[in-house]
Amino acid sequence: MIELEQVLSKVRARKPGRVFVQVPEGLKPGATGLCRELEKSGTETILSLPPCYGACDLREDEARMLGCDLILHIGHSDYGIKTRIPVIYEEYRVDYDPTALLKRHLPNLKEYKKLCLVTTLQYLSGLPKARRFLESRGKKIFLGSPSVARYPGQVLGCDFSAAIPLESVVDCFLFMGTGTFHPVGLAMAVKKPVLFLDYETTELVDMRNEKRNAERMRMIQVAKASHAKSFGIMVSTKPGQMGIKAAISMKRKLGKKGLSACILAANEFLPSQLEGMGIEALINTACPRIREDARMFKKPIVNPEDFELLLENL
Image (cartoon, rainbow, N blue to C red):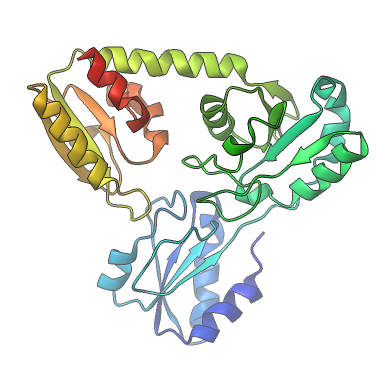
């Protein structure tokens, strides 16, 4: 949860004239109230309306253009993006205790003695509780230190470094939280089993079937893209996603194959933006989640980790 007084205190300490407020979709209902409280202390506020997908999605250029001297970024943790305007990251946490769920599913964990626990930012408070319970039942628990994310055991959609280095020492990975995006991504990044303790359905899911489906779809995307003659290389202007160097390299390699490639820049990519451009396939250097929208774009989408495989099939 967000502590209003704590947020107000942090902002007031900076004595800003105008604050640019970014809030993820799920917290938007309380955003106008937050702005009203800030303005009671004489601070002008501007609320950013576009969706905010993570700490990678800082809208600093917009903030500067609107004369703001502070960004208040709600819901995500700082992972080191350098900015010209100071940024206050106010993390969003849910105080959830997974002990009861783990106790219920303990028989399904019987074959695993050494487990690596991972989750997303909002559920980090549950990791120590899960660790204590599982260790009391004879399990050996590991929490990895990520290279991009901020906290032990924390994963992002683009960063599973809290898990991957531990693959040689654990029997399985246990993701605890909500939504399949992160556990599927982790399953694609490792060979050991990935289990998903779903806080919404209360089920424990072995992600092997989901991994097979995701890998099959990934290969289908590469196969379809290998028939294309014109490519669009997607480059996000979000500061934490920008992959222009990789995009330029990819464009050159496609050119050597005699293929047409155009670098496409946007803060957010929509199918309507590509209508009538004659682009047959997309290469995504932005958020890896975009690949899930291939059906919506009606074009194959290939992520950077599959680019060399694509080249081999062209």
